[in-house]
Image (cartoon, rainbow, N blue to C red; front, side, top):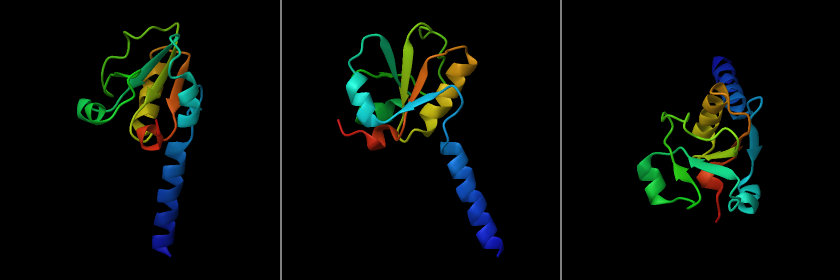
Amino acid sequence: MEIAIIVGLVIAFIAWRMMPTKGIQTISTDQLKGIVNDKDKIFVDVRTPAEYKGRNIRQFKNIPLGSDFSKLPKDKEIIVICQSGMRSNQACKQLKKLGYDNVTNVRGGMSAWRG
């Protein structure tokens, strides 16, 4: 009985963490393919430099999570990616707190990217 409660809580926590945050848009990697060459958007990869070096999308600039995002322009949409979508969601939350309005998280991250 106790194990079932613990498992239920873990599943609920994971589901809660995956829910989109208010004010943060999400797109799929298929949707990303259609906009990846848009010069009016800023593309940010928040993975570690080693992860980025191993595999990346060339339009994305590597700015690891924990870096200073305040230098990014506030007048353009910022598309954020990581390996799975969790760190990029955290980065999107940080950007919102810094006053960025147009922030988009790539759902599934590089794990879902087939480009």
